[in-house]
Length: 144
Image (tube, rainbow, N blue to C red):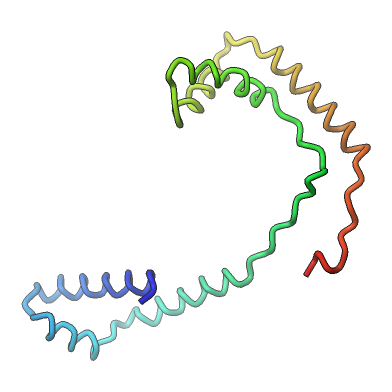
């Protein structure tokens, strides 16, 4: 059985055992399960079909041009880029690094002007590169 069908089957067995208080043997249980089909089974089957249909209609991801200019970084990203190594040196790891960076950025005592300036300069760089950039024309063979 596939994973989702197995889960449905397991939940049906548990529901059946809860209602019958476990007073049957395994062979009796199998016989009953083969003859009795719960009324909500059809709904589950329809929902499964709907999920499978949604998966089929998924859009293809647009291929990114490797020659396109890199997007501009924000002031916050420049702050993270410069501060993260300091936090890692202090022993902060994993998700705690991002939490700490967020808290530090929100502090009103932090001087954000150098990071804001770096963000502004990078935004100008990106705008200039985008003016000079000409995206490649997509051919009909790439769309298929």
